[in-house]
Length: 517
Image (cartoon, rainbow, N blue to C red):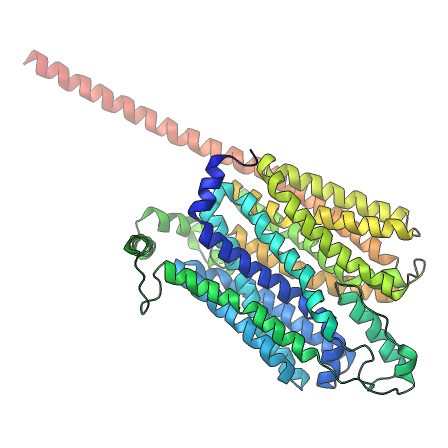
C-alpha cells in the first residue's frame, strides 16, 4: 500500500484539524506571492517612486518575521491557537479588501505590515499544531502542508494577471519605466505580455487601472479560510455561545485545557518548562532551566535555523532575481520568455513538495536533506558552468526548485525528532527561514547591482555550500546529543540498580526474620 494503516488511521482521526491547517497554508501561499505582480499598479495607485514602493514590500516581510517569532505564544491551548488562526485569516481578507483604498504609500505600508504579522502567526501556529498532533509521523503531513504554500504561490499570479495594467500610469520617465518593467517581471510568478515602453515614453494614453478587482477577488478567495477555522472551533465546542451536540469533544477539550493550565508539577508543563516547549523564541530564551541542558541542545537549534536561513534565502533570491539574470547578458532572453522562469521555479517547488509526501514516508528526513542539499549545490554549479546555455537555465531552474522544495519540512521534522518534541525548533526554524529570505534578497540584489548579473549564480553557489557545511555540523551535534542522552539513561539505570538491590536485600532480611520468629 501507499501508506500503512496506522498513518491512515491517524490522519482520519485528525482529518478536520489537518485539512483546516492545510487550507490556511494555501491562503498563506496566495498572499505571499500575490503582491509581487501588482507592484507597477500599486506604484501608480500611490503615486510613489520605485524605492518607496519596495519599502512597502519590505515592511510586509519584516512584520512576517516578527509574526513568526511571536506566534508561538498562542500555542498554549487549542482555543488560543485556533482563535489566533481565525483572527489572522480574517485580517488578511480585510487587508486585501482595503488595499485598493490606500492612495498613500504610508497607508499601504501599514496595511502590508499588518498582513505580514497575520501571515507570520499563521506560519508558526500551523507548523506547531501539525507537529504537536503527529509528532514522529509529522514528516508526511508537513510535506503536504508546505505543498499548499507552493500551490497557492503558483495559482495567485493567474488571478492577478487579467487585471494588471499593461501601459503603466505615465507618471515616470523612460528609465523609470524600464526599471519598473524589470522589477515587476522579477517579482511576478507567471508569464506576462511585454510592456510597450516606447508608447509610455512618448506619453501615450493612460490606461485606467482595474487592479482593485484582483485584490477584492483575493479577499473573497481567502474568506472561506477563517470560516473553516471558525467551524473547527465550533466542532471542538470552543465557542461558548454556540454549543454543538457532541459533548465527548467538549469533555476532551476541557480536560486537555485543564491539564495544560493545571498544577506546576504535571508532566506536560514540566517538559515545556525544562526544554522551552513549542513557544515563541523569547519565552524559550528566558527559560531558567535551559542552563542544565547540554551544548548540543542549543547547537541543534542554531545550526538547524542557519541551514534554513541559507536555503530559504536561496529560494527568495532565486525567485526574485532570476528574471533580472535572464534578461541581462550573456543570456539576454526576451522579456516575455524570461517571465516564465519564476513560474517554472514555483511550479517545481510545488511538484517537489507533492513528490516529497510519499518520499518522506519511505525515507528518513536526514537522508532527504542530504540528497536535496547536495542536489541544489550540483544544480547551481552546472548553471555556473553552462552560464551561456538558455536551455539549461530553464532545466536548472526546474531542478533547483525541486531540490529546494522539501528542505524546510524535512528540517523541521528532523530537528523535532532529535529533540523529542521538547525544544523550540519550530519557532526557531520558522523565524530563521523568514529572516533568511528577507536578508538574502537584499544582499543578493545589492551584489547584482554592483558586480553584475553573473554574481547571481555565484552568490547562490556560496550560500548553498555554506548551508551544506552547516548541515554537516548539525549531524555532528546530533551524534553528540544522542551520546549525551545515552549516557544520561545509563547513569539513571545505574542509580536505579543499586536501589533495587538494596530493596531486594531488605525484603530478604525481613522474610528471614519472620521465618526465625
